[in-house]
Amino acid sequence: MLDLHRLTLLREVKRHGSMSAAARELSYSHSAISQQLALLEKETGVALLERVGRGVKLTAAGESLVSHTEAILAAIEKAESDLAQADVRPRGVVTLAAFATISRGIMPVALSMLVRDHPALDVHVHLVDPEDAVRQLISRQVDAVLTDGYPGIAGAPPSGIHSTVLAVDPVRAYLPDPSMDGDLERIRYVPWVMEPLTSGSTQWALRVCRERGFEPIVAHQSADLLFHLRMVEQGLAAAFLPDMVLGETGSTLTPSSWFSADQHRSILFLVRDGSERRPSLMAVCEAVSAALSTRR
Image 1: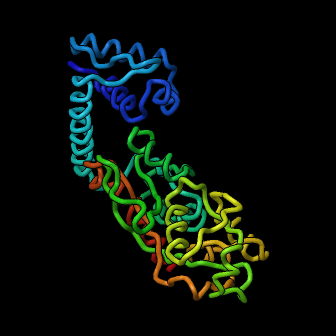
Image 2: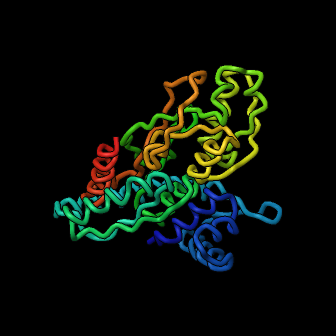
Image 3: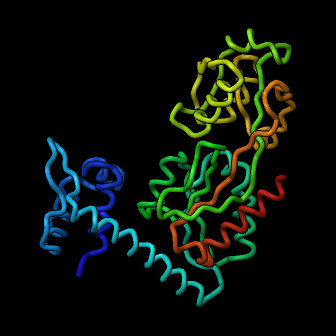
């Protein structure tokens, strides 16, 4: 019988492109993964990996086995959810990866609701960058992810991931000097503060600026949206800020009227396919949704 753990390791090698990258992601040694995959090849009786330069790639048989592994993992998730539904009371431990903005403003409220309504449920929150959080979900290091998505940027969730939209949060442009609002020639030379360039929010923001006819000067980069807010308040940079951040701080900044006011991000709850009906995950999802509603 094939070992599920080894099958999962093979899938991670495919996902990350190398044994070394998979080892770093899973906190394994390279030799440990190599030994486990050698045992998997012995179990299957076929070559699953082949050398390419200093690295490896999956053979056709390895690719086929990974596709079956995805189906196996989804079936296991579904079976575990079905078993969990036999006892409708949410219980056990749920590990949730979430981004900082919603963790600060929403998760304490949601956790208080869960303690009150589901005392047998123990939720652990990890602050994780959105890109890393999705990888951890796929690798089964966390049970759910609370993240955001921007129009035309996030796209469909990765294969094997079930996504629920909990809320939309308006995102507006703020300029360091309100007198420049609508003056394209002045806005062209304004420094901007954005999240790291690879993030979905920054890719979205760059597209919005280009559609308005200018290339923004991204002078500052930080994943901390409170830093973005303070930079605007001090007149040092422009930024795109979600309403949730301004509501959290009570800021009285006035958004630019030159940029479209009909922009928003989606707040998403992600779980692995097959686990979306698990009572514990449904309880967490409902609590976060309720906490978002109270904030709105």
